[in-house]
Length: 266
Image (cartoon, rainbow, N blue to C red; front, side, top):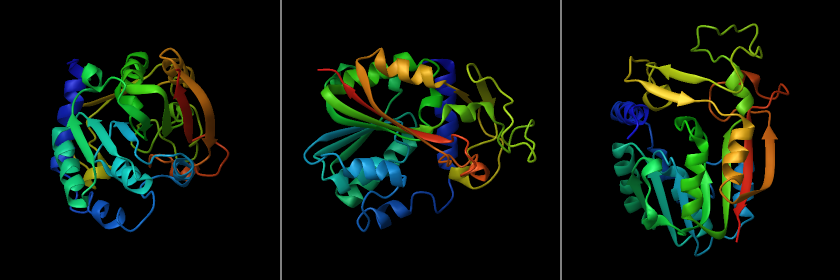
């Protein structure tokens, strides 16, 4: 396993071990009562419009499993399989699947290490906010994803817009609240290394093990998909933040999030 990936695994597991008491509690509360909870409205609208019934759904970088559990329940899917690197988060997700009596299973694995056991498994794949940045090589990432998709399978990617890569967030030394839209970093090439923790899980500041992530341009994302027999069938861009870092720029005409839809050839 690459050093940065092993480091991220340890940092994510540390964050989950120090999670706030409220983290993940609403999974078993909301999923039985709501349709498509934990998805942004536009993503939920897309998912409502596709046939998930009796299908097998995969999610890459599934975190605590809430989105996959939500889609399997609301879409009446036959099965859901989620992958994430943090062993304790995966164990938590498997517990929630049992509590909800949903046909989902979760595996703790480096996405790059997914083997041919999962070839041609999925009818639908979802990738949500905060997944792509943990992989230095997106072509390699989408090569793995595409192998798990059946011919004709659909993929839905709801992520932070690449333009936000140029902005400073409030935790960056370069941040200036009077110039939030100022582009301070390279759009094309930036590696981030930090020990500021994962606040949205822990709800506290702490000196963490090292997180390493990478920014990617729109062309890297689109090329990574197209190079691996995934045809782009839709692209929507939105002026609202879904990652929590740029909400002050919501609805100020700056691209903050997006949905990419695709279909595997064949």
